[in-house]
Image (cartoon, rainbow, N blue to C red; front, side, top):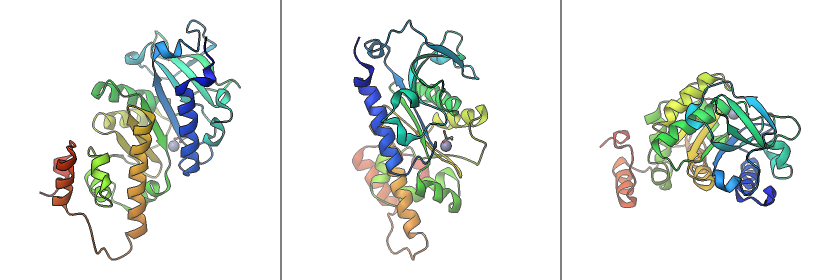
Length: 271
Ligand code: 2HA
Ligand code: ZN
């Protein structure tokens, strides 16, 4: 059996959490990540017949029975993950009943997975139905994206258009735009269901006055999506109060999307 601390998926989880922390996206215990793992890869590091304990998830996820995830722990701080992964992360498998998590590794101090597990698992189900390659769901509280939810109209088309117009890269990186949820209580099945519904159409979902969810095939893609939204939101917050001299026109957004061959939301442009 190989040493779990050498596992590339564990290292990537640690490295990503540290980067997110240093960017200010995950203050205190803010944010959470879940990463769908390959069973054969996990089997190189852990005895899959050895369940440390079981933890109810609080909802039914029949589509994910047998699937294994590495997930950040509830109440844990992103800044501590890299130096102490075994207390701050856990590897869980969704049991045959679809409603119980079998702990295979981690949460060593008796902890459990993030309170946002319903939103994560439901979002995994949604994204897998659109793209079977999807592995990551990531949630965090980036400054400018969050600030923008205080001052910008929270309409999906309007918000996406504003972000696309901030910088050339935007429409190329997130041509599918952003889904938007109004303010809601977090940690509930309701916000999980609402997020997952949006995830059928978007890889990015903004939670008004809370933060953002991103989904992707791997950690870099998912991180990069949120990073690009946050950069565009920063440009907006740095300039929204100043006279607008130059902007990217709708015809130029179309040119960009066509040149880079991305499948963009055409009804979001006024053309
Ligand atoms: O896990 O970010 O949304 C802490 C949070 C809850
Ligand atoms: Zn949050």
